[in-house]
Length: 113
Image (cartoon, rainbow, N blue to C red):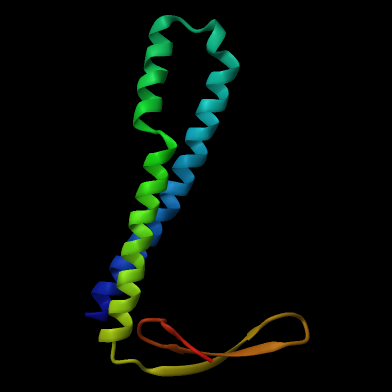
């Protein structure tokens, strides 16, 4: 069960990263279009309008929200279904300080301090 949830979690994180990357590319395309639109024919303007309809900002926002909600549900399922193997470690906060953390070796869920 944990392996399935971890695979699903990693896949969704990758989808969120790809959405962020796609949004950046889309913004670059829109910016370039603004710079050259006066010199484009009606055909190109129509293609750009279709592109804008398909790739509007709401698509990215809602898709990302949906994926993050699903990710939260997966985290809850992992915490509830994993037979946790608790591990203690220390992470550097800065050059002079470390912080103790506890997490599961199987599902990487962090536990409260």
